[in-house]
Length: 351
Ligand SMILES: *[C@@H]1O[C@H](CO)[C@@H](O)[C@H](O)[C@H]1NC(C)=O
Ligand SMILES: *[C@@H]1O[C@H](CO)[C@@H](O)[C@H](O)[C@H]1NC(C)=O
Ligand SMILES: *[C@@H]1O[C@H](CO)[C@@H](O)[C@H](O)[C@H]1NC(C)=O
Image 1 (spheres, rainbow, N blue to C red):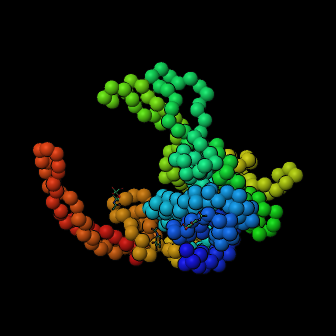
Image 2: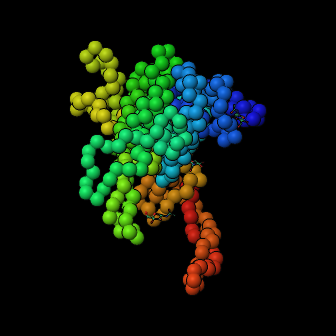
Image 3: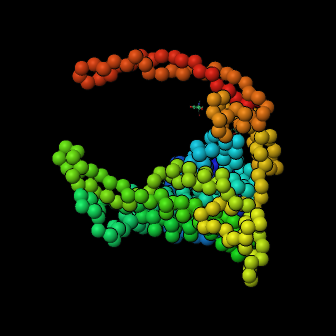
């Protein structure tokens, strides 16, 4: 336990950076740590006052929020494995300030973080991990013949209320420390886009009943799609994100699209203030790891193709041995035996 707290203090020092997604540093909390005393809230990394307050008043919730931080990291990196920017900056405190500059990448990370925290809380209600909440409400409408409401709906409403209270807290602070006004507006907007993507991911899920799987009756409930589906949706929005500027509109300054067409920012589009580098070369100041030694795909025509990934620098081949199951035989009754086969595949990494 003592050691876990020592590690925490270290992370705490590293994460004294800035701003709204500092709480993602929670993804590094040792899994041996059980938040069951209010003093624990003080040593958790990356929390602003109101988040620490939420921690103290609801210790049980923290375990879920730590889980959410881990999900953000994992899902972001999976979703961007085929891109030059592969979300490794999320891991690296030194690169976090870059995500606060208001780039397209920051837009994605904020949207995903907001979606993930509400997603995780909504699911924790369903699984019984949180005593504060239970299943979501049963839909008001009468189900179609052959269907009936049942099961346990994901409690999206609770997830959204509590999740946004936590994840938006840094942007709602009065103090200057949360970054510039423009950045806060950007982060709040993109967080809301993330939550909207989560609302869109609430779908009908059903289970069949009846004699030997005849499915004569179905029990249905509203359940959330997996976070990776939400992340794919947000990646599409990332690719078509809109550059905005901070301009007076009426009595206050707001974010408006930079290009000439005068229209307000749409509720379902991600917005950014600063253009990103091309992420080809390593540049610590710009938060770019560069793509040297990244794996690329010679036959792909997408963003993971060797041309695009390696920025025209070329690539080096190497071989990898794969061990696979093969020559499988079915034995009556009832098992399967397989042999192990080795296969060599060519892979490529960027120069
Ligand atoms: C808190 O968690 C620790 C570590 O898991 C455990 O040893 C301790 O008994 C818990 N304390 C309470 C009050 O539940
Ligand atoms: C992302 O890219 C960097 C370098 O470009 C590499 O070091 C890192 O392992 C990659 N991360 C993941 C999760 O693929
Ligand atoms: C490379 O891209 C092709 C075409 O998109 C795909 O079928 C293949 O699975 C990819 N290979 C690897 C190793 O990812």
